[in-house]
Image (cartoon, rainbow, N blue to C red; front, side):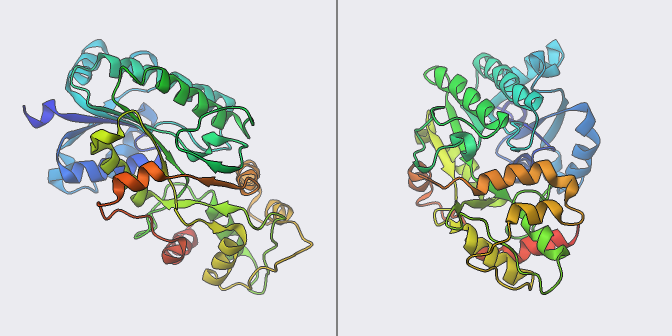
Length: 352
Protein backbone atom coordinates (compact mmCIF):
# COMPACT_ATOMS: atom_id res chain seq x y z
CA UNK A 1 0.00 0.00 0.00
CA UNK A 2 1.54 3.34 -1.01
CA UNK A 3 1.92 6.34 1.25
CA UNK A 4 -0.91 8.21 -0.44
CA UNK A 5 -3.28 5.36 0.38
CA UNK A 6 -2.32 5.63 4.05
CA UNK A 7 -3.39 9.05 5.26
CA UNK A 8 -4.28 10.94 8.42
CA UNK A 9 -6.90 13.69 8.24
CA UNK A 10 -6.42 16.77 10.42
CA UNK A 11 -9.19 19.33 10.84
CA UNK A 12 -8.71 22.77 12.36
CA UNK A 13 -5.50 23.60 10.48
CA UNK A 14 -4.28 26.30 10.75
CA UNK A 15 -6.87 28.01 12.98
CA UNK A 16 -6.46 25.70 15.99
CA UNK A 17 -3.00 25.77 17.53
CA UNK A 18 -2.80 22.02 18.31
CA UNK A 19 -3.55 21.30 14.64
CA UNK A 20 -0.54 23.36 13.53
CA UNK A 21 1.84 21.38 15.73
CA UNK A 22 0.13 18.12 14.85
CA UNK A 23 0.50 18.62 11.09
CA UNK A 24 4.17 19.48 11.46
CA UNK A 25 4.92 16.50 13.65
CA UNK A 26 2.98 14.00 11.53
CA UNK A 27 4.58 15.31 8.32
CA UNK A 28 8.03 15.06 9.88
CA UNK A 29 7.48 11.46 10.96
CA UNK A 30 6.33 10.47 7.49
CA UNK A 31 4.39 7.36 8.50
CA UNK A 32 1.30 8.56 6.61
CA UNK A 33 0.48 11.37 4.25
CA UNK A 34 -1.32 14.26 5.96
CA UNK A 35 -4.59 15.62 4.58
CA UNK A 36 -5.58 18.99 6.04
CA UNK A 37 -9.19 20.12 5.80
CA UNK A 38 -8.78 23.90 5.45
CA UNK A 39 -11.43 26.59 5.10
CA UNK A 40 -11.08 28.96 2.15
CA UNK A 41 -10.39 31.89 4.47
CA UNK A 42 -7.45 30.03 6.05
CA UNK A 43 -5.89 28.72 2.83
CA UNK A 44 -3.25 31.45 2.49
CA UNK A 45 -2.17 31.11 6.12
CA UNK A 46 -2.01 27.32 5.74
CA UNK A 47 0.26 27.63 2.71
CA UNK A 48 2.53 30.03 4.60
CA UNK A 49 2.93 27.55 7.45
CA UNK A 50 3.61 24.64 5.12
CA UNK A 51 6.37 26.60 3.39
CA UNK A 52 8.30 26.52 6.68
CA UNK A 53 8.49 22.71 6.57
CA UNK A 54 11.46 20.84 5.10
CA UNK A 55 10.78 19.92 1.46
CA UNK A 56 10.42 16.21 2.18
CA UNK A 57 7.85 16.82 4.92
CA UNK A 58 6.02 19.44 2.85
CA UNK A 59 5.46 16.90 0.07
CA UNK A 60 3.55 14.66 2.47
CA UNK A 61 0.92 17.33 3.21
CA UNK A 62 -2.08 18.16 1.03
CA UNK A 63 -4.71 20.85 1.53
CA UNK A 64 -8.38 20.03 1.01
CA UNK A 65 -10.50 23.17 0.87
CA UNK A 66 -13.70 22.60 2.82
CA UNK A 67 -15.36 23.09 6.20
CA UNK A 68 -16.12 20.43 8.82
CA UNK A 69 -19.36 22.26 9.66
CA UNK A 70 -20.68 21.88 6.10
CA UNK A 71 -22.50 18.96 4.51
CA UNK A 72 -19.94 16.46 3.18
CA UNK A 73 -17.28 18.66 4.80
CA UNK A 74 -17.74 21.17 1.99
CA UNK A 75 -15.97 18.84 -0.46
CA UNK A 76 -17.06 17.78 -3.93
CA UNK A 77 -18.34 14.25 -4.42
CA UNK A 78 -15.06 13.10 -5.98
CA UNK A 79 -12.96 14.72 -3.26
CA UNK A 80 -15.04 13.17 -0.51
CA UNK A 81 -14.80 9.73 -2.13
CA UNK A 82 -11.01 9.99 -2.42
CA UNK A 83 -10.62 11.15 1.16
CA UNK A 84 -12.96 8.49 2.51
CA UNK A 85 -11.03 5.75 0.75
CA UNK A 86 -7.56 6.71 1.92
CA UNK A 87 -7.81 7.90 5.55
CA UNK A 88 -6.68 5.62 8.36
CA UNK A 89 -6.64 8.14 11.20
CA UNK A 90 -8.71 11.26 11.84
CA UNK A 91 -7.61 13.98 14.27
CA UNK A 92 -10.62 16.25 14.66
CA UNK A 93 -8.99 19.38 16.08
CA UNK A 94 -11.42 21.93 14.63
CA UNK A 95 -13.51 21.92 17.79
CA UNK A 96 -13.75 25.42 19.27
CA UNK A 97 -12.75 25.30 22.95
CA UNK A 98 -12.36 29.04 23.64
CA UNK A 99 -14.73 29.80 26.55
CA UNK A 100 -15.39 33.26 25.11
CA UNK A 101 -16.68 31.87 21.79
CA UNK A 102 -20.23 32.46 20.59
CA UNK A 103 -23.39 30.36 20.66
CA UNK A 104 -23.04 30.03 16.89
CA UNK A 105 -19.55 28.58 17.25
CA UNK A 106 -20.86 26.19 19.90
CA UNK A 107 -23.53 24.97 17.48
CA UNK A 108 -20.80 24.59 14.87
CA UNK A 109 -18.96 22.20 17.18
CA UNK A 110 -21.93 19.84 17.24
CA UNK A 111 -22.50 20.10 13.49
CA UNK A 112 -18.84 19.44 12.68
CA UNK A 113 -18.72 16.41 14.97
CA UNK A 114 -21.77 14.94 13.25
CA UNK A 115 -20.12 15.40 9.84
CA UNK A 116 -16.85 13.85 11.00
CA UNK A 117 -18.71 10.89 12.45
CA UNK A 118 -20.46 10.37 9.11
CA UNK A 119 -17.09 10.40 7.34
CA UNK A 120 -15.58 7.99 9.86
CA UNK A 121 -18.44 5.55 9.49
CA UNK A 122 -17.87 5.45 5.72
CA UNK A 123 -14.06 5.11 5.79
CA UNK A 124 -13.12 1.45 5.06
CA UNK A 125 -9.50 1.81 6.25
CA UNK A 126 -10.22 3.75 9.44
CA UNK A 127 -8.10 2.68 12.40
CA UNK A 128 -8.70 5.60 14.77
CA UNK A 129 -10.89 8.66 15.20
CA UNK A 130 -9.30 11.09 17.67
CA UNK A 131 -11.61 13.78 18.98
CA UNK A 132 -9.95 16.82 20.56
CA UNK A 133 -12.28 17.96 23.33
CA UNK A 134 -11.27 19.88 26.47
CA UNK A 135 -10.98 19.18 30.18
CA UNK A 136 -13.43 22.07 30.63
CA UNK A 137 -16.24 19.80 29.45
CA UNK A 138 -16.62 19.22 33.21
CA UNK A 139 -18.22 22.69 33.40
CA UNK A 140 -19.09 23.86 36.90
CA UNK A 141 -18.02 20.63 38.59
CA UNK A 142 -15.46 20.92 41.35
CA UNK A 143 -13.33 18.35 43.12
CA UNK A 144 -12.05 15.17 41.48
CA UNK A 145 -13.14 14.56 37.87
CA UNK A 146 -12.40 11.16 36.38
CA UNK A 147 -11.65 10.57 32.71
CA UNK A 148 -14.76 8.40 32.53
CA UNK A 149 -17.00 11.17 33.91
CA UNK A 150 -19.39 12.95 31.57
CA UNK A 151 -22.52 14.59 32.94
CA UNK A 152 -24.40 17.86 32.99
CA UNK A 153 -25.65 17.77 36.59
CA UNK A 154 -23.71 20.89 37.67
CA UNK A 155 -24.29 22.83 34.47
CA UNK A 156 -21.81 24.70 32.32
CA UNK A 157 -20.12 28.09 32.44
CA UNK A 158 -20.64 28.86 28.76
CA UNK A 159 -22.17 27.45 25.52
CA UNK A 160 -18.83 26.02 24.37
CA UNK A 161 -18.55 23.69 27.36
CA UNK A 162 -22.09 22.47 26.80
CA UNK A 163 -21.38 21.86 23.11
CA UNK A 164 -18.34 19.74 24.03
CA UNK A 165 -20.58 17.70 26.32
CA UNK A 166 -23.03 17.15 23.46
CA UNK A 167 -20.21 16.18 21.10
CA UNK A 168 -18.79 13.64 23.54
CA UNK A 169 -22.26 12.16 24.04
CA UNK A 170 -22.55 11.67 20.28
CA UNK A 171 -19.19 9.94 20.20
CA UNK A 172 -20.03 7.65 23.10
CA UNK A 173 -23.23 6.59 21.37
CA UNK A 174 -21.20 5.30 18.41
CA UNK A 175 -18.34 3.99 20.54
CA UNK A 176 -19.06 0.33 19.84
CA UNK A 177 -18.99 0.91 16.09
CA UNK A 178 -15.96 3.16 15.67
CA UNK A 179 -12.35 2.96 16.96
CA UNK A 180 -12.49 6.33 18.67
CA UNK A 181 -10.43 8.09 21.32
CA UNK A 182 -11.34 11.30 23.17
CA UNK A 183 -8.66 13.73 24.33
CA UNK A 184 -9.32 16.39 26.94
CA UNK A 185 -6.39 18.81 27.18
CA UNK A 186 -6.33 21.25 30.07
CA UNK A 187 -5.59 24.97 29.64
CA UNK A 188 -3.23 24.94 26.66
CA UNK A 189 -0.27 27.28 26.35
CA UNK A 190 2.47 27.69 23.75
CA UNK A 191 5.36 25.44 22.85
CA UNK A 192 7.51 24.86 25.94
CA UNK A 193 10.71 25.20 23.90
CA UNK A 194 9.96 27.91 21.32
CA UNK A 195 7.03 29.74 22.92
CA UNK A 196 5.08 29.59 19.66
CA UNK A 197 1.35 30.13 19.99
CA UNK A 198 -1.32 31.68 17.79
CA UNK A 199 -3.46 33.53 20.34
CA UNK A 200 -2.17 35.18 23.52
CA UNK A 201 -5.19 34.49 25.70
CA UNK A 202 -5.79 32.48 28.87
CA UNK A 203 -2.74 32.68 31.15
CA UNK A 204 -1.12 35.10 28.71
CA UNK A 205 -3.69 37.71 29.75
CA UNK A 206 -2.03 37.80 33.17
CA UNK A 207 1.43 38.07 31.63
CA UNK A 208 0.35 40.84 29.26
CA UNK A 209 -1.18 42.71 32.17
CA UNK A 210 1.99 42.48 34.26
CA UNK A 211 4.23 43.52 31.36
CA UNK A 212 2.12 46.63 30.82
CA UNK A 213 2.02 47.52 34.53
CA UNK A 214 4.55 49.75 36.36
CA UNK A 215 7.62 47.94 37.68
CA UNK A 216 6.48 48.38 41.27
CA UNK A 217 2.94 47.15 40.59
CA UNK A 218 1.78 44.39 42.94
CA UNK A 219 -0.77 42.08 41.33
CA UNK A 220 -4.04 41.62 43.27
CA UNK A 221 -5.07 38.07 44.09
CA UNK A 222 -8.51 36.54 43.60
CA UNK A 223 -10.46 35.39 46.65
CA UNK A 224 -9.90 31.69 45.88
CA UNK A 225 -6.11 31.56 45.66
CA UNK A 226 -6.00 27.80 46.30
CA UNK A 227 -7.73 26.88 43.04
CA UNK A 228 -5.40 24.71 40.95
CA UNK A 229 -4.48 25.58 37.37
CA UNK A 230 -3.56 22.72 35.06
CA UNK A 231 -1.62 24.17 32.12
CA UNK A 232 -0.13 22.05 29.34
CA UNK A 233 2.25 23.15 26.57
CA UNK A 234 0.98 22.40 23.07
CA UNK A 235 4.08 20.36 22.18
CA UNK A 236 3.44 18.00 25.10
CA UNK A 237 -0.25 17.70 24.21
CA UNK A 238 0.52 16.82 20.58
CA UNK A 239 3.24 14.29 21.39
CA UNK A 240 0.96 12.65 23.94
CA UNK A 241 -1.92 12.62 21.44
CA UNK A 242 0.12 10.92 18.72
CA UNK A 243 1.35 8.26 21.14
CA UNK A 244 -2.13 7.63 22.50
CA UNK A 245 -3.60 7.41 18.98
CA UNK A 246 -1.09 4.68 18.11
CA UNK A 247 -1.98 2.51 21.12
CA UNK A 248 -4.71 -0.10 20.66
CA UNK A 249 -5.54 0.16 24.36
CA UNK A 250 -6.78 3.71 23.75
CA UNK A 251 -9.75 2.63 21.63
CA UNK A 252 -12.99 3.64 23.33
CA UNK A 253 -11.15 5.54 26.07
CA UNK A 254 -10.99 9.16 27.22
CA UNK A 255 -7.76 10.85 28.28
CA UNK A 256 -7.15 13.96 30.36
CA UNK A 257 -4.03 15.67 29.00
CA UNK A 258 -3.15 17.67 32.10
CA UNK A 259 -0.35 18.75 34.39
CA UNK A 260 -0.19 15.98 37.01
CA UNK A 261 1.11 18.50 39.57
CA UNK A 262 -0.95 21.65 38.94
CA UNK A 263 0.00 24.86 40.72
CA UNK A 264 -2.44 26.98 42.70
CA UNK A 265 -3.59 30.36 41.39
CA UNK A 266 -1.43 32.11 43.98
CA UNK A 267 1.64 30.06 43.01
CA UNK A 268 1.10 30.88 39.33
CA UNK A 269 0.73 34.60 40.08
CA UNK A 270 3.98 34.54 42.07
CA UNK A 271 5.71 32.73 39.22
CA UNK A 272 4.51 35.27 36.65
CA UNK A 273 5.43 38.21 38.90
CA UNK A 274 8.97 36.89 39.29
CA UNK A 275 9.34 36.20 35.55
CA UNK A 276 8.18 39.73 34.68
CA UNK A 277 10.25 41.30 37.48
CA UNK A 278 7.22 42.59 39.36
CA UNK A 279 6.62 42.39 43.14
CA UNK A 280 5.06 39.18 44.41
CA UNK A 281 1.30 39.34 44.99
CA UNK A 282 0.05 39.67 48.54
CA UNK A 283 -1.59 36.71 50.22
CA UNK A 284 -4.66 38.80 51.01
CA UNK A 285 -5.32 41.86 48.91
CA UNK A 286 -8.41 44.09 49.20
CA UNK A 287 -8.21 44.87 45.48
CA UNK A 288 -9.99 42.69 42.97
CA UNK A 289 -8.06 40.90 40.22
CA UNK A 290 -11.04 40.97 37.86
CA UNK A 291 -11.49 44.73 38.32
CA UNK A 292 -7.78 45.36 37.82
CA UNK A 293 -7.67 43.34 34.59
CA UNK A 294 -10.83 44.91 33.19
CA UNK A 295 -9.65 48.46 33.84
CA UNK A 296 -6.06 48.04 32.66
CA UNK A 297 -5.06 50.14 29.63
CA UNK A 298 -5.01 48.06 26.45
CA UNK A 299 -6.96 45.19 28.01
CA UNK A 300 -10.44 46.44 27.11
CA UNK A 301 -10.42 44.58 23.79
CA UNK A 302 -10.04 41.35 25.75
CA UNK A 303 -12.97 42.00 28.10
CA UNK A 304 -15.10 39.03 27.06
CA UNK A 305 -12.09 36.70 26.98
CA UNK A 306 -10.94 37.97 30.38
CA UNK A 307 -14.34 37.31 32.00
CA UNK A 308 -14.36 33.76 30.63
CA UNK A 309 -10.81 33.16 31.88
CA UNK A 310 -11.62 34.48 35.36
CA UNK A 311 -14.56 32.06 35.53
CA UNK A 312 -11.99 29.32 34.98
CA UNK A 313 -9.93 30.56 37.93
CA UNK A 314 -12.95 30.29 40.23
CA UNK A 315 -13.53 26.57 39.64
CA UNK A 316 -11.44 24.27 41.83
CA UNK A 317 -11.08 20.95 40.05
CA UNK A 318 -8.53 18.14 39.89
CA UNK A 319 -8.51 16.11 36.69
CA UNK A 320 -7.75 12.42 37.02
CA UNK A 321 -5.23 11.35 34.36
CA UNK A 322 -4.86 7.66 35.13
CA UNK A 323 -5.45 6.51 31.55
CA UNK A 324 -2.91 8.99 30.21
CA UNK A 325 -0.27 8.05 32.77
CA UNK A 326 -0.65 4.34 32.04
CA UNK A 327 -0.30 4.71 28.27
CA UNK A 328 2.62 7.14 28.44
CA UNK A 329 4.43 5.37 31.27
CA UNK A 330 7.23 3.91 29.15
CA UNK A 331 7.25 6.54 26.40
CA UNK A 332 9.36 9.23 28.05
CA UNK A 333 6.62 11.77 27.22
CA UNK A 334 5.94 13.87 30.31
CA UNK A 335 4.32 17.22 31.01
CA UNK A 336 6.95 19.81 31.99
CA UNK A 337 6.42 21.96 35.07
CA UNK A 338 5.11 25.45 34.37
CA UNK A 339 8.15 26.92 36.10
CA UNK A 340 10.45 25.32 33.53
CA UNK A 341 8.99 27.28 30.60
CA UNK A 342 7.47 30.40 32.17
CA UNK A 343 10.35 32.53 30.82
CA UNK A 344 9.54 31.25 27.31
CA UNK A 345 5.92 32.34 27.78
CA UNK A 346 6.97 35.79 28.93
CA UNK A 347 9.39 36.18 26.02
CA UNK A 348 6.57 35.34 23.58
CA UNK A 349 4.19 37.79 25.27
CA UNK A 350 6.80 40.56 24.98
CA UNK A 351 6.78 40.16 21.19
CA UNK A 352 3.14 41.20 20.88
